[in-house]
Image (cartoon, one colour):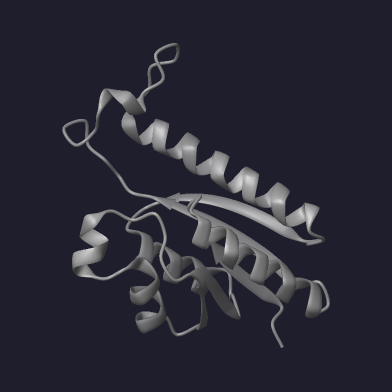
Length: 147
């Protein structure tokens, strides 16, 4: 039924719960392909803080966020493989999270998106609606929200 499962990850506890669910699904559906995606938002130098830049290797805020996103994906991939997922691919993308997740699902022909009901968003997510709420409401792909 599900051959390609997309699981967005952001390092939050909810994302880990969603990842556990997605791995279980992948193992139950003849080792479905599991795609992990971490989306980071563009931040201009005016929006950034110096605390995000590593002192020994100065970089732009976008580079620091991209590195962090890749690290989250690498950890999630290792976690999924430790739990028996056989075909796991990881991606880090820059963009507005809900739009990027939906576009990625369509581009990679995902059958289902499994995501945490709440992630590590900021106060803007609380006021404007969470990423999971936006994705589940706008995606043409089946969505499973994990609490």
